[in-house]
Structures are given as structure tokens and as C-alpha cells.
View 1 (cartoon, rainbow, N blue to C red):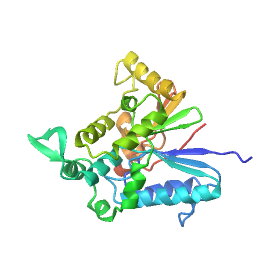
View 2: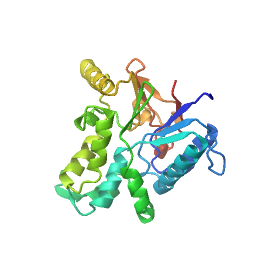
View 3: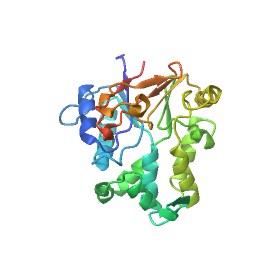
View 4: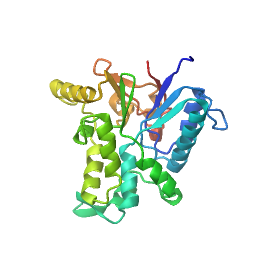
Length: 271
């Protein structure tokens, strides 16, 4: 049996050209964007749109590669990110007021929040189809690959939805099919939380308890996430970031390369 390599890519945020460069550099696609990864496995950790110029193009690339990889005996997995929730809320409940949110004393609609705060792109809104939205709603929140838990955000908010990855994924799927503005707004707000496993941000015992809770619920020994740009943790330009940020004694790995901020990006190969 051929040895399977598992690759992980963090937040792409509409940066299709940078994504294609990464995929070709790893030998996962050719210049015509055809899957050349054979039986290998590739995972995306969410946030396909916003901030960058071609979020719909990223969605279509991932969808296409999923089909191609399956035909070749490989796999392309794709998780849900918080910006994907923001986009879906803006599409499903555009004129609904975001619960418990005022900015400069004024309420905001879900559409306004997406456009004016989250980096929503008018070009994406113009090219989104029902097929794209259906695909986004079907994205799982968590995935286990061996003893590694894959997730978008570095937060324990997932545990508010269930006790196991299967329960959490089912609850997320149900939320994204709800028309309840309060439920959708709370989900969006909680998904924005970050850095809940970092000892430098939280007291050591609190960060450790959060990490143990996530690992315990999943039965994994380490986790990989995006959501928090690595360049912010290093305090240097995104253009200088070429590798993941590993912390918590090697049990956490941050792979948000901030492509939207000019980062060259990188892929993580799971051991």
C-alpha cells in the first residue's frame, strides 16, 4: 500500500493565486489545477472568503479538487470557518439585526457586518450560487486525522455545541439551517473567540484546562487550527511567516499564514 501524506492549509480568505502556488509547490496540483496528489490527503481549515479578491474562486477550487481527489483515491477535506458563518448569515438573514450588537450606538444587520467589518467582497456576493452556499453549510466543524484534531478556531466554543466531534458537527449543521437570528448571531460571535489555548494569553492553568477539554472530547493528543494569524503572534510582517506556530509543548499548531496580508503561505504535513 502506498504511503499517504496528509497536508493541512489554513485560512485562504479569497487568495486563489497564492493558494494555487502552494498546491503546485507541494505537487498536489499541476498548472491546470488538476489533482496530482494521488492517494494523499489534503485538509482546508475554513475561511475561504472575505478580505481577499476571489473567495468564490477558492470555494470552486476546493470543490473541484474534492471530486478529482476522490476519483484518484485521495481525499480533500474542508472545515467550516467563522468567516464562512458570517457570509452565510449575511446571505440567509441579510436585513436581520445582529442581536446584542451596536456600533457607535447603532444596530447592524448581518449584511452590514459582513460588508463593513468582516472584509466581505461585493464580487463574491455577485457570484455566489445556491450550490456554493449548500457546500458551505455542509462543512464540518471538526475532523480527526489519526491522533490529530483539525479545527478552524483556537477556542473551546465547539464544546458548547456537543461532547464529541460527531455531536458538534451535527449541531453546527443544524444551526446553519436555522432561521433564528439569535442562534445564528450567537454562533457567529462565539466562533470569533481565539487564543484560548495559549499560556501567554491566558493563565497557564486556564489555557491547559481548555486544551485538555478539547483533546479529551476528541480523543486526540494534539490539535491544528487556523483563525489567529501567525504574524500577529510573532510581531513581524506576514511576508516573513513561512512556517506554522507550534506551542503548548508541541500539542498545538497554528497554520493561519495570513495570505490576505501578503504572507507567502505554507502547508503543514502531519506526522
